[in-house]
Figure 1 (tube, one colour):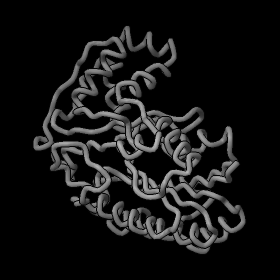
Figure 2 (cartoon, rainbow, N blue to C red; figure 1 turned 135 degrees about the vertical axis):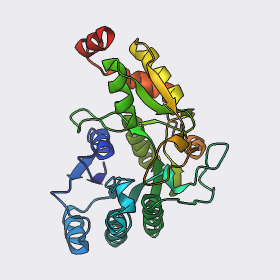
Figure 3 (cartoon, rainbow, N blue to C red; figure 1 turned 90 degrees about the horizontal axis):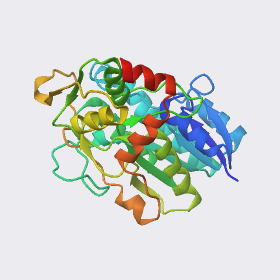
Length: 294
């Protein structure tokens, strides 16, 4: 049994990670109220007292557009706080797992990015996350896991959020879901990402960088159409292109990630189609009736 400290344990991914580990391991769930990761002394004190075998960082500043106007806030959480956690992990002899993002790439590829591809961040948020990766890699035993387009929630976790929730909510109301037809992603179900994280540790996999995403990729338009089919509703969608939408921060158009490195060590994530089916199966019968009848 491992002692696992989960930082950002009340967030969408952090709650799923805490839930995944709690059946077989001792989980130390740390929300913002429990630990200020910006304070290196607080981080050192908390981890020295709790003596974790593993520190998993799921905390992040993920307001992509706001980061353009608040670069110091993004750097403070996505980079400097990661350095605090990484240094402490090294000091207490813990494995350090840090979650990063597909945004570290520029989105000009024509096939899923692999871990050896050269990052080229195009926004403040993306640059801050890449810097966090570098700090995390200073720990002798570390895993940097890039995740993307997260959806779903853990039992008892915070309400789901993100693009997928917006699409599903629009579809169930009979409203028109506006989705990008030229952004390609690997939508990832948070329980699956959390399970992969646990398997990675329990297998004693080689440390380093991994893409922890659903297998396969799609455009947001393809995803929305699949969601409508799964819900049994009319696919009321409006396809838009990235160039037609004004966004403060640039988004990578092609940001699918390959999880082949994880699969090669026996950690296989389901396809995004299977993940979507599992996500929709968690809806209650009452909610399904609401969706079916508008």
